[in-house]
Length: 504
Picture: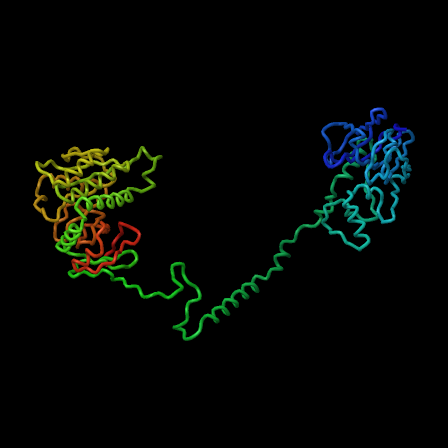
């Protein structure tokens, strides 16, 4: 009896762990209670092996999809679950089978018409359509037929065919018939999906752009009218810039620094604050009062060196130039210093530059007696990688990246007549590198070296045009020190220690 089922198409449910298998029965072994399927499909995917064997204890449910009798060539279909005893073994069946323990159930197959004349079932659907659907699709179709549900035109299921249209099948060999059956069972009907192209122009015409923008503009006008009350002069603007405050603030006072004896020049910061220049006598009094409160010369030298080196590093390129990946192109700075306080400020700046991996060449002439501040700064500079020379011939022959000028002094003007001074000034003017002057002398004194930038300390002096663009350095003078010398002071630096000044 087991041989009668050979060649039939069955569906075997092995539970949640093993899944569902479909295929053609190739062998049934009554003694070992096993059944084998050829060309099996596991959960809708074709198995890589040609044949799979199942034990009776692993089968939860067995359904016969199509009965093929090889002796007389009659094909039969059954919608009922096959009794496990029909295959020669006593297995257990779940709810779908309805039998257990060897109970006999009539599982006689129902003979169906031939392929050319498909029989229509009560629901208006042919058997080929019924078995080509999954359980969920058949459930939806039955519910849709009862409630008059209309399926979407672009459905991705093969059930979109009409109720009276049979699934086309091709005549051929057994393997070809199996392939058509597989495509019919697991494939999707995509021929009727791409028949109609998407109408982009029609959908775009549904969006009325002019009406939408007119509605937005009308809402803006209503919003502006609700906020704009009173006279036109009192109306507040409806839109503000990114740098404009919404809350009303007090008027800004741009002249926050008032000096008793202003100089000839007047400057302004980037924010518009007015910074007046002072005379050299007032500058000396300011530093003297600061020194009496503890701001010694050494502290001023250190502060000036830090600010000047910060400005020089920015002029040399900053992070774009001084990076670990750019070791082969380190900048070179020539530092020209004289035997005075301004020279000591330059040496302090050179020490900080050398600490930041800048090649520094310091020029300082030999003198029998040096200032104590210069001696201490030279001792610190000698511990860096910087180079000190006392002759102009030892300076670089090629143009350097920056020249820092500290040759001039506010008091010792006779140094300009010295041969070393003239030689150093000529070398700086002939070199093509830009010049930065630290604490240059006041207007009226001759500028031997034309500078591109000049750095003033505390408050600017009245500088000539050859001083270039003026920058201001914060050396840490408290506000009360300014008040003691008669200066009404408010810091113009903000978040910086070095700020640019513009001619007012």
